[in-house]
Length: 267
Image (cartoon, rainbow, N blue to C red; front, side, top):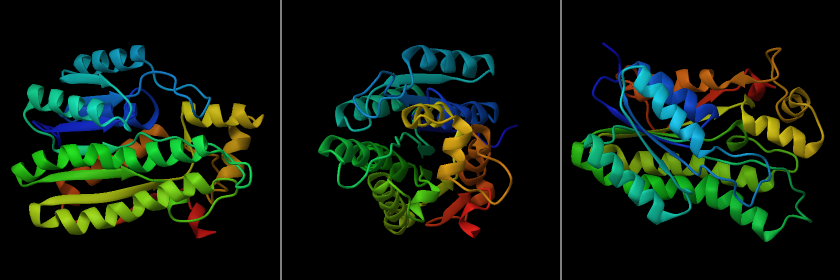
């Protein structure tokens, strides 16, 4: 018996990185998985995004674990694509118990040279995206009288960061929405929390390093400055935290921020 037997988890940004690791862990614990990802290259930033092949391989991996999965591709900024993915999930599994708003981007930009496209992409994906997905999932959670929404913010959703004002704004906004949603949705038995990782060893970290002309370790150390002697955490570390917060073991956790920062915020 797993903690998520008979439950359904909808995960954005699921093709690789933290989303994929979480999907696989929840599947091992019995969850049905709905994996949503842009699955193509977008205009900003320039590093590589998830692919359709990765989504297909995730579906196969979940099924190899004995689980069930549906996949859908689309941009979290596109309400029609989000709505179609949610409806596909409901048609397949009848409900959504867990929403992991994981899809996000990061890039550096100085305020006096930041373009409108950079600002709009960052805010659109990191802030409007979770809103788009959540507003389409919540009606089904309300109907069930339960649900857990976990927003993947960042340590930068609790502090500032050099040359990251658009990213910081998006992640502080997500932290604030977490608190507002927790208040609004508590009467319906729905919990809402945010997680705040330090740098994570994912393709995004590699892409940021390449854009800055640094090694992945150098970009992680410059961005993070962890107290523990590690440049980053692994995607699986995020997955373990999400699994705990989504489980009944954390049934009274809502409106709160959970750091997974290797001590960064203690400095």
